[in-house]
Length: 158
Image (cartoon, rainbow, N blue to C red; front, side, top):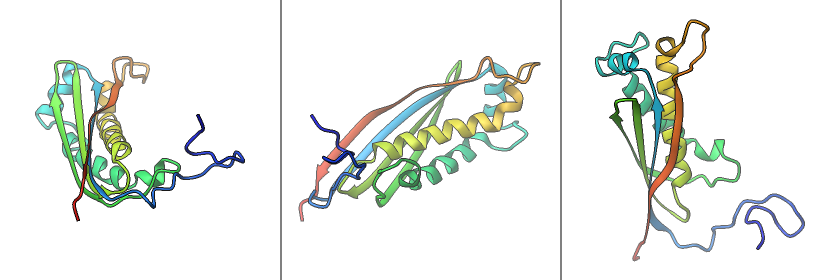
């Protein structure tokens, strides 16, 4: 079994998708940021000093999705046709869900993963003053369980 991103001489390469058919692609990724109850209350009541946490995280996720090929080596730039970001407030944190669509020769899993990661990182940045302990550390804050939860490919009949 060979590596897909290394040629026979050991040189790094991008996978050639030229001959693949264009198809409808869809992927959903999710992840969780654990936060203290006081922080969750501030988010839900829109009382975080930096502004609307979830609205800012949506914009951050959308921007990141569109830049995925600039962030992940050998990831193909693709025409992103739709991005949707949702959140679920949990008892112990926030779950972010990012869904991405395209019509392309390759999937959008990496775009969905990058989007959800940036949404969670943005939440952390927006609430870090509330999460710090007396030493300036974040003992209760963690990002976890980032994963692809759905992937779909449908051939386009031309």
